[in-house]
Amino acid sequence: VDKNSQRLTIAIQKSGRLSKESIALLEACGFKFSLHEARLLAHSSNQPVDLLRVRDDDIPGLVMDGVVDLGLVGENVLEEARLERQATQLPAKINILRALDFGQCRLSIAVPKEDNYRGLADLEGKRIATTYPFLLQNYLQQQGIKASTAVLTGSVEVAPRAGLADAICDLVSTGATLEANGLVEKEVIFRSTAQLIQRPEPLTAAKQAIVDQLLPRLDGVQMARESKYIMLHAPKARLEEVVALLPGAERPTVLPLQHSDEQVAVHVVSTEKLFWETMEELKAIGCSSILVLPIEKMLG
Ligand code: ATP
Ligand code: MG
Picture (spheres, protein in one colour):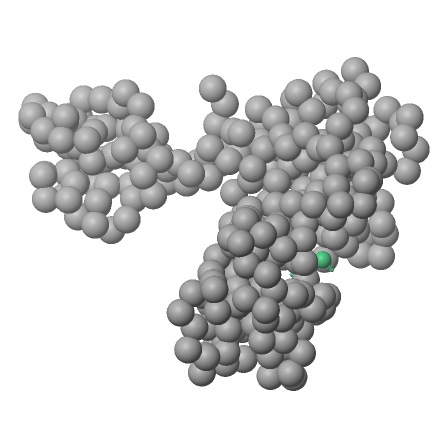
């Protein structure tokens, strides 16, 4: 990658849990990419932007060293790299631009289900298998517990049965993998989502201009995902109650309905996810024709 290039370079995970949503997010922000499975680098066809597709573990270092300008990576991987680089005197500065709304997971300590675990103190002097030795030791130190770590880059969950460790510290989303391996989650040590990060040194003006355009678009995409456009018919007399049921609703648009004096049409943008319960409550106070529509984009 040419550091002096006028093209903004963004590192994303090549294949894994963050890949699809990373590309989808950038595309929703207006960047077009043609991706070839085998290629490391993908050029945008409509912006001076390149994607570098790598293993997620490499992304924090590439950004901290300024080899690429931006990166999309899990906070877990970012924090682990930051702690590791601090410990080894490597540059560890980074700008976190945005926390994103995907890649949710947690890093947890789990123990064999037959263990009579009562609390963290039970881990004193034990060995814990993990892919995140720095996050784990950081946590244990804060809690005043001394335990050793066995670093495994994969299949952490089989370590206790294989006699390699007494407990594990691994990413959990549903808990199904733990369950299948006879483990029970006991302590959540870190909660993570994907993050948009930027290298510490200032960008060239041309690159900064692209980032300045990207961020409001990204906020618009994320805000739209959290919001719904709601249309319904409501009794004029109960408008206040209707709006109260729709949290985050801005001032609603109220339109007259033909051939009706008691009923009006109401249009609102709401951050409420609109569960069936809310719709039933709306119906109970006399609303009808309730429509909930997804929003694709939003701008101030
Ligand atoms: P790579 O080959 O790039 O090193 P990997 O196997 O290390 O991939 P993945 O399993 O694809 O990593 O997970 C990538 C990141 O996705 C994790 O570090 C975490 O931030 C996030 N993640 C983990 N589990 C989930 C999940 N169940 N749902 C969404 N995101 C997750
Ligand atoms: Mg990885």
